[in-house]
Length: 377
Image 1 (cartoon, rainbow, N blue to C red):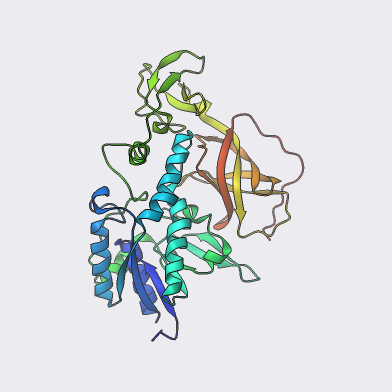
Image 2 (cartoon, rainbow, N blue to C red):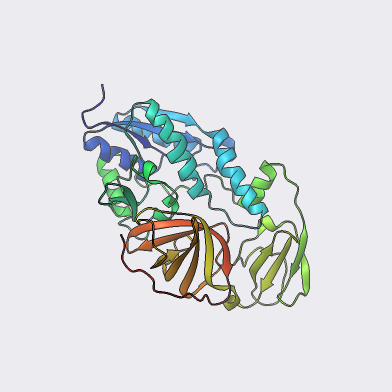
């Protein structure tokens, strides 16, 4: 019989955050069902560090048993490979830098798991993300930064639409990480002091993530030249998938001074290096696939802050709508190493306004006409 407060599916990775999230909902009187997503075969994950390996399943099962809630493992290996890993590889192959965590949240945690939760009669799903939910006047949900600014994960949730957000709960989003660990100790959870799980759910110390994906999908490595900014050939590389804008280590050539990847030309399979970090600066960007959560449609230009990678300090900017789903962003100050393929997420204070995917960085100052709107509708 479903609890009067409702039935909730808790995504349990085996980490402390998702375990405490499930426990908090249980304390509130919800009926909780724990689900662990199996995203990889057990031999493809790093023991103890990946959120989807054998150790994660064991930790999640132990936490669920301690809490007295049912626990199941949902096999998502095939859909994870096709929707997350393959999509990530296709981005690397194009010389771009994907963000698998954003894709996984949209396609797996709030896609496959959400659909499965409905078959169990669950009203919502809960995760251990450090993010919070707000609601507009008409009731539509939007995302807010987590209370712990050092652990805030709202950046990875920007692509969730309002329907998915209406089915989401983030029980630990209003707490500091150390408070969550303290609660776990109070609750007697054995994973209270467990180390952080890996974000990508697929990692190794010996090989780069992109190279793992190349081998996984049996793609041939396409070598090409490495040039400096003057066009001087410096050497050869074993594939543009091994590089990302702003990369300094593992470039494969020695210049006698620090060098960074300035640009990647996928059509010519070339990599351009610079010895000046200032040359990595971008004055703006073009983002596509942009969606808005905490804004009403109809505005042309907006002042807000933008974050172009996780853990980056947000930068004040003006965002201008070029056409539906595409925006031009002008930074108030230049930003280093803006990577195509990564997310550009827009905020007003703690409120996540929307976001999209970086299509290209703009190396020259961006000129806009007109006044940016300051009001968040």
